[in-house]
Image (tube, rainbow over all chains, first blue to last red; front, top):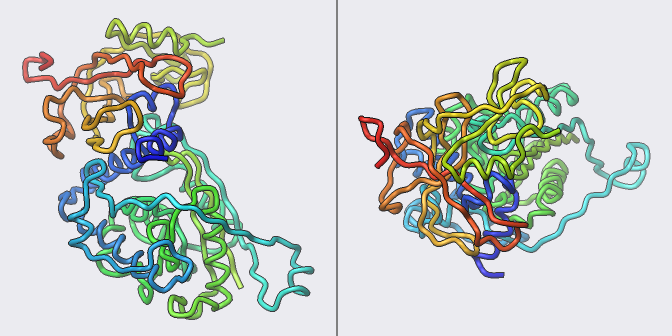
Length: 271
Length: 139
């Protein structure tokens, strides 16, 4: 499939009657989110753009340590900011690739899992939330689906965001990682981009985000992405991640988004 | 059951008339139309006509377009005077040179018929916003 055909296919995630006819693309949705974010928090666009670029740089850096990542090479802020514009303000390197890939998870009762594997991973909490089409969400810098989903998962697990050691979240675009990191409770609303700039979300930072390289660098095989996030967290909690291992990770979380924030699923896993 | 179908909504848009649904329980206006109120979920709604006036809340310039669309063009989310937000196109003479200054600018709604989509069961009609100058005239 060519670029325009893929853009058409992916645009089908929008409201088919009232949004798709505008020619709004998937990157276009998150581009509008970036502009809304810059406006809402009064962050000059060039400042936000550089912070967004740092998310891409960080995830590519993580990807160099993942032998299964689609892109295993580092990029620079300059390279991101000089890449072709897809839809303002998102440039090619603000966007995840379209990937082929597969992942699998074996689920079993605790009793069986403990008999069969040396390091079984426990599902501590799950949550799912739904949102509305884009225009009905109005301010989508705070996605209702994600607030609902994550609070459900935290409640079930009996933990708070500060207890999470490692996260795989839905960085389909650099701005998507920033808003997700706030909505999941790791940073205050409006502070996620600064946290990215300060390296809080890098390996070794306060809350390492997307050690696998994320959708951005590991790749985004749409249907397999959520499962692949669970795979990475399970490997992290088993301390099997080699150079990209988050030291002493005991609790990990996944965050998977669908559509224009139409659905979010969160899973909290523990040793 | 539907007080305002998408066909009726599109037909009105073709006349540059924006129709929505006013909730008789909570007063919220739901547009584009759907069977339940966006705020409270009530089906107790009546058809109402909106001003089609509002302000841009966010935007993007699409430079890599889906099949059948010709880039560049500007897509906006506008907040209508009556409260709801609406996704539409912006009539921008130079789409490539729009900036963040667009946010907050007043707009007035017209329409554009979109016939060139491959996987839909028929044409659609989208709001086409124009910037409004200080005298309230679309330019």
